[in-house]
Image (cartoon, rainbow, N blue to C red; front, side, top):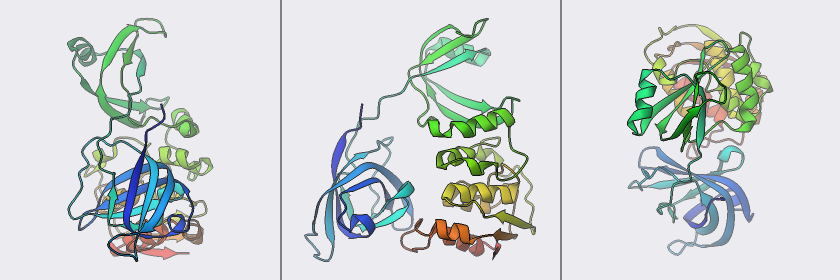
Length: 339
């Protein structure tokens, strides 16, 4: 069933890019909501269509923009911060600044949650805790760990399961299949399948740049692989400090590629050191294997500089994503050498 389309009003806008240039079909957008200090919410809009542009009633130098869009339902925990500021992004990955506005009328309406997608666990050999969970009839918290062919951890998903039925497995023997009425919120997209298959067959790569052949969805998946859940690393690795690391910048053509290359530069082939600006900053705080200070030599940095010139993380600073990452490292005490 297609998502319900709604009317939203970006009120009091200072707009830029396609939002200001008269285009009507804008595709996907992101509304970033700030309190008085930092961003606290991110709302995803799909298939945004501009219906009306008109002067703002309180200030003719601003505009109100009425759009029709599908709003991705949230978990109901979003409430309007006070004070609140709104930044609008669109374009590839909803990363291009489209402007700011004083309010987004209609954004905080109540919405039904999307229909749950059922999932079947095939070929289960239940241990005692799982058998108990199957018989008590209660919703249970479930952690599914994906492992490669050799049994090494790849990634994991967690959710509360609701069991519809159990049955003898189609795989035969004494195994069972468990049919759930619900599944994970964001299952891997089909476009990420080649990356999953590669890690399943071979595990963590032993040579760098194996991620290069994958497109954006595959690179996103690549950044979820590699061992324990990320939070389990904190404080469990002895930080190496004072070293010099080399980042191969030849293939850094998108944000995902930047973080794949950064993870490999600091942690070796298939390594992870954050998947976006926020998690990268967290890893710089230490406890994940590499500690400050250190030196990063970024080879062929002009590739990322050009490819990410239109990708802006913080509209107020206005820095392209590449420059934002370099600035972040330098502010935290990393010596960055751009070549």
